Length: 125
Image (cartoon, rainbow, N blue to C red; front, side, top):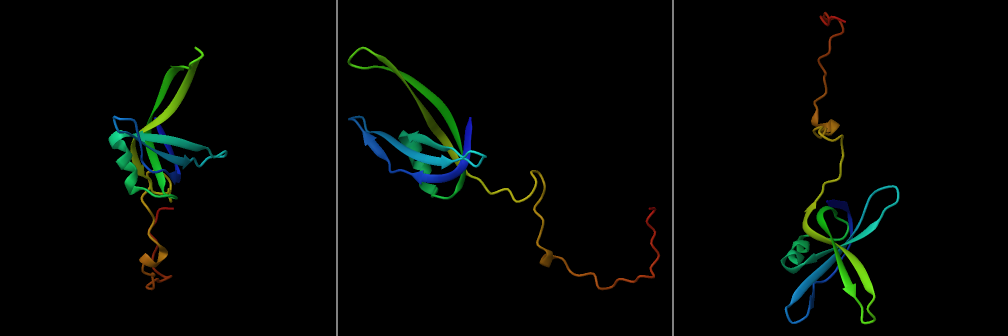
């Protein structure tokens, strides 16, 4: 699965426990009618993937949904979900229709100054 949007926040790498478990969070704001602020966590060696990105950048993140069960000291079972990223890439803003090559600016074309209105038009229509 993927999440695409603009980077709103990139957190610092956090280290937990004696094993040195590392986690880093990023928040991406989707660009839709009702924008959503989606927090994605990167863990262990994947935390370094966020080093090359900054706030305001358009990104696409490949994610896995994770769920776990936890029993509190009173014996109640609780369930938690997380969104875990495993790849992130920059996305260029769409300027033209998908699959269409970009159109060069008008200045890239030379003006046609050798027009002759009396030339025969051989077009069939």
